[in-house]
Amino acid sequence: MRNIFLLLTLLFFISCNDDVLPKPKAYLSLEYPAKKYEKLSISRPYSFDILKSTTIIDDKNNWLKIKYPNLKASIDITYRPVKNNLKELLTEAEKLVFKHAVKAEQIIPKDFVNTEKRTFGSLYEITGNAASHLQFHVTDSTNNFIKGSLYFYAKPNYDSILPAVAYIKEDILKLVESLEWEKPI
Image (cartoon, rainbow, N blue to C red; front, side, top):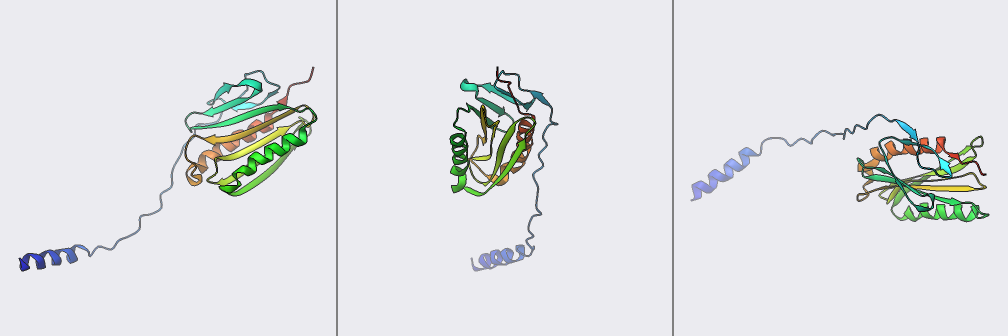
């Protein structure tokens, strides 16, 4: 019995001679389809370009949901007419952004102005494991106000969804750049 124990101990130590090396870093390689845009086909007090591969869900009050089925994400668009309440609408939009401050590592604002198209707004990038990673609002400051939020249908893990956030951010920037307000009658 003692010989078997010595033999097993000897085999155990002999088998442990290989050096353990860390595995090399691997990078997730995601490929997204080429982007093709089209004008929003639903009649609204606004119009903008959207990615063809998205699905549009029409909602009441001129609201929309732009779904990215392959990414399990959506951009929720809310519309509100401006009726001497612009300050209230801006305050409400910022409150919704800063609700994510608890989980966010950083909130990075970016303002944009297009006087020719009468579009004025802000885009907020929210880093960290927050529920929404991109939020924006755009107004003409007299009649129209829209707010958009990007949501993923998964538990937030910022590192994992960062490539998808960057992909959709391009679409949001295209949306804002192409945004036009319906002419008042």
